[in-house]
Length: 309
Length: 309
Ligand SMILES: Nc1nc2c(ncn2[C@@H]2O[C@H](COP(=O)(O)OP(=O)(O)O)[C@@H](O)[C@H]2O)c(=O)[nH]1
Ligand SMILES: Nc1nc2c(ncn2[C@@H]2O[C@H](COP(=O)(O)OP(=O)(O)O)[C@@H](O)[C@H]2O)c(=O)[nH]1
Ligand SMILES: [Mn+2]
Ligand SMILES: [Mn+2]
Image (cartoon, rainbow over all chains, first blue to last red; front, side):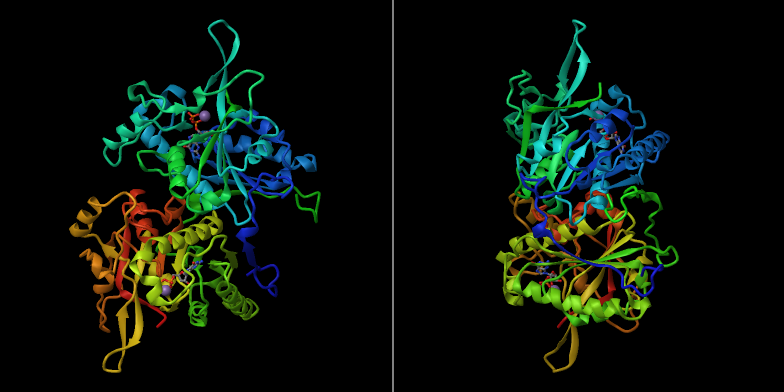
């Protein structure tokens, strides 16, 4: 009961899930979107980029999950500064709401150094931990009026400002843009290279590999020791100026650096398995689980977002 | 932005999941509990029974999911009447909040007649539909401050008034009471009989059965055509007056007529698989998934709740 007004009956709310659309006309239908970010480090470029999104900010809610470590405390402080600036700034830039969760379990690897993080033997424990973080965030922030969920990593620092309109316009249950990284190439020139190898179409080699595995074994992508011959979206990009940014390809696995999901898919039960699910975990396992639930995954090979260098 | 007060920055909320305990001392720690009920028909006995719960009502929130059918519309109206009475009645009886979701997909079997519902061939499609309903309800109502989730079916009309205190006091991640049904026996005497066969310990027969099955096949409990020789909690009850109501037994499968779950288990990702998961679905699949996530299921063979006759 509301102690400030003892006479007032507590809230009873009635929701019609049928009326919560997630459609190609997201702006016109005023569809709400929940941006979810597991965050271990704060990048100002991440926030600055999202501030430039032209989708109505009043339809955008945020959810963050941040580890309860020293690094996580620093990230939380930096994030809160950025938020405070935005939410006290011009009204049209303010977002609808923001939830920050502090994680109640330990990240298994304390170092955030890239070489460390990627060592193959760490993948299973690391991805289980990431999956649990994503699930905690999802289960606690998804509401009955959310139309879309946009998963975006804290180190994605560049997207088109029309990201939400562009992606929702495809009207796909699950859709991933192609995640690249800017770098300086051998010739000292600015260049881009593929970053996220988790968006792929399955191969017979990978299927045979899976068939010979124990129930808890997983296939991880992007390691020479385990060549899967899957068709990676990262390797199927047209990087020319004249490319068709609206080209789509069906996918069997998806990455989570940026990932748009109709809220209905999650409500149906699609989560991020922290265990081997068809020999897949986390975002790749999510894709498989969504398919088990009757949903399809798609990728945009020529539509780019950038991971921090 | 809040249009009624344009100067006020929108809410930024910070949650510490670590501080959300789910402990044996639930009342003392003021732990919040979310009671979730998939509801196809409204039973006044269900509501009257829950009204008698002695756990502080201010710590109890409700979530319902009701099919968008004619029967569902009637159930919604009846539920809303009952709620209106309670929430405008004595303050200590009022609950913290109530969400009613109307389901955005069709229930596969429109008849609610018991013989119809139980036909073995319908089990797969029926349990998939129940699982989706439970997931939609769970994903949209679970919040960051919920400590416990109590699943209770709409046709459970009798429980001890101390149900929540009794069950939380065991401090188990997942705990099921034994669900019985009152009836008139052959001799015309009032009697009770087991109702929920989904709480069980696995058997070698069932394991062998599963090993020989296709990936989408499921084992269902309580059918002579498919004798599993699992040890059913329903058949392991001591019904004498002097029974130890606090006796516990470990379980591999759980039913959902009444089911207490630490919110953390769901946040970790444990949901109700609407597909064959280790040849199990819905609540039984949930038990298996929770175990994959490192949680244990327990039953209270001598602690009873009653399904409507
Ligand atoms: N909450 C949480 N977030 C994490 C953890 N580890 C990494 N992250 C965040 O999860 C996302 C993906 O992690 P990252 O290390 O960038 O993965 P990579 O780019 O695939 O190597 C980023 O937004 C990280 O800030 C963790 O243990 N807990
Ligand atoms: N939302 C929803 N609830 C349902 C549906 N079918 C049954 N229920 C409810 O789910 C619970 C379990 O269903 P019930 O038919 O009693 O199962 P049984 O007792 O195991 O045969 C009860 O609370 C029903 O009112 C459905 O299609 N949608
Ligand atoms: Mn990254
Ligand atoms: Mn029932």
